[in-house]
Amino acid sequence: MSTPSLPVSQSQGTRTLSSVSVSGFTRLCKGLALVLVAAHLVLNFFPSAITYVALIPARTIPFAWNLITAGYVEQTVHGVVISIVCLLFIGKLLEPVWGPREFLKFIFIVNTLTSVCIFITAIALYYITRQEIYLYTPLSGFHGVISGFLVSIKQIIPDQEIPFLKIKMKWLASISLLCCIALSFWIIEATTYLPTVIFGTYMSWIYLRYWQKKPETKLKGDPSEDFAFSTFFPEFLRPVIDPIASIFHRLLCGRSDASDDAEDYSVGSEPLPGSDPIEASRRRERGARALEERLANERLATSRSAGELHTSAAGNV
Image (cartoon, rainbow, N blue to C red):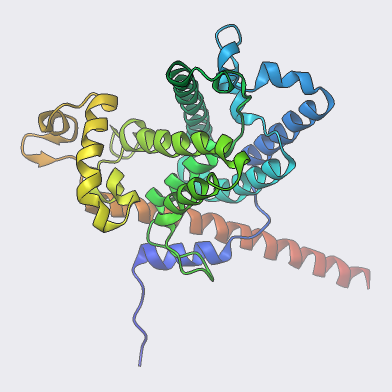
């Protein structure tokens, strides 16, 4: 009696998650990891450098470059370790699907937009409260991009489960955000991370939802219902979230009515590829297939290397 087979995307994604090995990290991820380590070491040896590389809202106007550099500066050792581990393992999943150029572009855009949002929020809070702590607290860290990575995983392999935890990948971004909010009530240090995590999550969703180019469809974004903003929340909250999300949709994305969406994603009465759930499912299957092929190549290279070593050892004997 044969056992029922899993759908293509689910079976491939399950094997992908269970087969991720420590080896095979991409060169780009390794290079970015070195940047994080180097930036942290610079702060250790030259503490005054934080004034020039971290985001300090009161000094951002003359030092505007800190909107970019702040995202690559971790001020604590555990922050460096967590960021590097997440970068290497999640990057190993995302970069084969997007390619190095798009992967680096995603990091740069999410990091910069997150810093801009934090700067604007800090200035607004200062004018509301008149507390200078909002202007002179150094803010930095890669955790905004890490939050964006979790949103990307929700888009590519949403229905796959984390081994041993039995949690679907689509909930990682929501769980991470919820944990940061909860910790901020008990740990003062967590409050400095919270704005970066919130804006990193939202800005990455904005980019993936509306701006990321899709070479296979010649369109931008992911308009599928499975990636709507309300899907980050439990189903019973979605009737409340959808009206709020529609307001931000119009304000931030410049789409005031449904006719704009029809113009962007349809020709006449027929939807273009990428604007329906079927195309979104196919895109996830292609992502899972690309990851599976990469892992298969790694296993083949490993087996060949082992075979060569065995042959060499036999020859020496």
